[in-house]
Length: 352
Image (cartoon, rainbow, N blue to C red; front, side, top):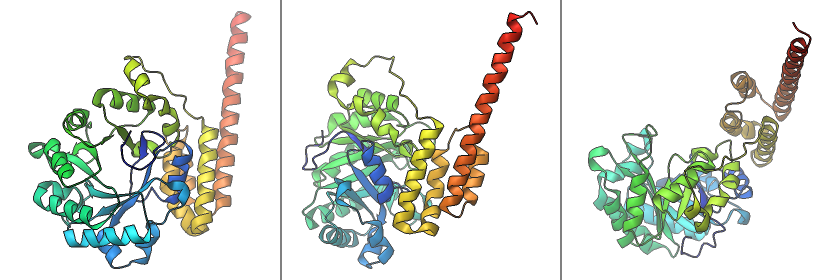
């Protein structure tokens, strides 16, 4: 467990994901067992400008605790000022510093993973923020800027010396973006050399992945990002692997988790949509949900056609109609398949 005053109920954490981890989705993931959640990545400079939309992104309910607000920036003074504003106005449980975002618009401002090329500047940022607030400060990093510069162990040692309470490592380089396999061995090496809790992140798309990460790296907790999109069940399914006794008893033959059927996925998607509309209004709520609906319907039969209709939907009634027609179509398809199988068996019995 993470030995700071967060009162975590488990070891599975929802990652901050731009455009996805709003209050509605965070609450859904909490319902399914996420022990901690994070806001979207927030611009420190926008905070110091008192930007209204930026402030709205940081709002949360008491039910979402423990929660971290993640800041991004490259100016130590601006980052410290933003951290003070966040601490005084929103009172999160943690302030997280993003040194891992690989997207071009962030890196071009020398923010996110760009700071992996300037460790002295990263150190100044961390020290200024830690000294500015009376909250735990954490950091999220990648394994390096590129293959030649990978050295997360020394980076984490620096973060620890600056007063960071815990660290999350996504063991891909910025050059990799989200391609290739995450090198979990970096998580293991960081954990073996750190004196602060280490959270593993990357390629945890199902409960079996969570089990393997705990077993192979010894990390204190796991942060789940893309694996939770359209699949908050992942927190529920992976819950059994949070306990050391279970992890130590694991063999190569890991149990398969029960995947929700189409009806269950569409039901949760509809609940998510209704809550989004309640919070943002119908127009904005549906627009925000479109990317979530793509994930909820991923790998369903005829999912491409289904998503085409969903993206064209402009009201909650439209989405309800699309889902209802889809379920009816799947029932008819299943009935035809069963009838065809029955006729085939009967023909076999009478000699055709």
